Amino acid sequence: MLTLITGGGGFIGSHLATYLFDETEDDILLLDDFSTGNPENVSHLIDHDRVELIQGDVIETGTIEPLVERSDRVFHLAAAVGVQRIVDEPLRSMRTNLVGTENVLEAAVDDRTPVFIASSSELYGKSEDVPFAESDDRVLGPTSSLRWSYASAKAIDESLALAYHRDHDLPVAIGRYFNIVGPRQTGQYGMVIPRFVEQALANEPLTVYGDGTQTRSFTHVADAVRATYELLTTPEAHGEVINIGAPDPTSINALAERIIELTGSDSDITHIPYEEAYNENFEEPQQREPDVSKLEATLGWYPSTDLDRILLDIIEEREQAVVPE
Ligand code: NAD
Picture 1: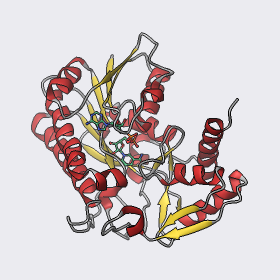
Picture 2 (picture 1 turned 90 degrees about the vertical axis):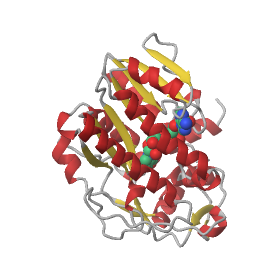
Picture 3 (picture 1 turned 30 degrees about the horizontal axis):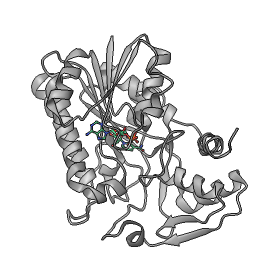
Picture 4 (picture 1 turned 135 degrees about the horizontal axis):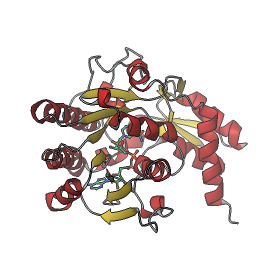
């Protein structure tokens, strides 16, 4: 079995590669352009015969087509990710997230190669009707606010995948990730936990965007990759959109306080307006919480690693990175 992971040098992709390496006999192809990913993320795997790492772009059909055609299944995780990157490079981001996905689906048609599509809780937008179920309406802001281009592109990706499933009987599983976090995630692209942990370890103020009452549900990456793998290998999940997330929300203020406690930091918490953080007419959803009943009905479980365990895993990793041996 040859499995392709696009975005395999990224945060979730590298954990998924490790999971496949440990839990299956698969040979593993990793494609990444390293725009936000890093070969270091998979350095523990690439010396093994079962793993091949290729630098390339999912937008380039000459690159992606032959890789999909060689593969027996595909996890399509490559995307322009993170609010900061979407705002800074809107056109390149949209092309990656739209053209890249269509390329993967189109290349999978002939052999009806199963494809997992990584979607996002961003699709629910500003809806306040928590918890969010897959069949709920979406509430997005105007196109003039660039952050919504990511949600729009991911929505089209889902629609494309569902259309390929209907018209070509392509086995697709679509997972909507909710704030997946864990070791190897970079703070550089606007991910809140690694940013707070790095600030706390440096005894610098933790910068909360907005008033900090906004809530998020955080999901350990180990839970997310197991769900990802099981969804693609569960035929009942094909042609379905399924939330991948943990149901317990926390406010960003509470998150900052807990990180200060767990790191024993002297940091304070400061609040800055979104406009200052992102330099534009920015909107941030107030609440994010998944309804996990469809995931539980499909797989028989849902992610439940508690927040302290998640935070301690990330703190431990960052401490090792900053304290020389
Ligand atoms: P990530 O940035 O670490 O992973 C994305 C990877 O795709 C990176 O390695 C990047 O270099 C690569 N990439 C980007 N453009 C590419 C291109 N044109 N060609 C080839 N590779 C390219 O982020 P992640 O958190 O691991 O995200 C993985 C997937 O999960 C993405 O599709 C993202 O939209 C989705 N997602 C993640 C979260 C989360 O909480 N982490 C939430 C919702 C959705």
